Length: 87
Image (cartoon, rainbow, N blue to C red; front, side, top):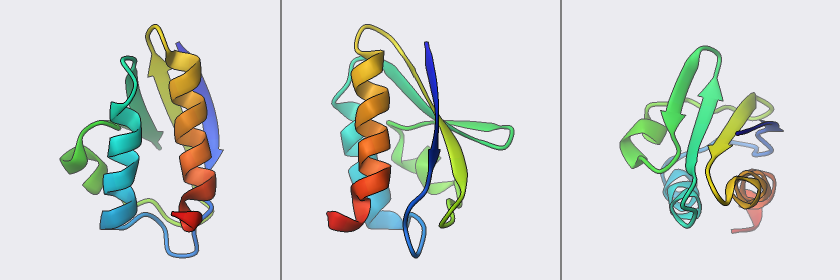
């Protein structure tokens, strides 16, 4: 299992479109992928779960990946959250 802290680097946080793209990114991996914020853990492959989070600019989250491609999954989600403004 990998736990990786990531800082949201968006001027407006994550709204519906970036969340949908994040879910697509997470769904590419066979590993389970979760986003932890405070004491809440949400499946990153669930659009409804991700929509329930309010992720603000500069907020630090933890990406949790567990499975055969967990390193790639954690790195992919981090890359997405750092470069989402370019999508």
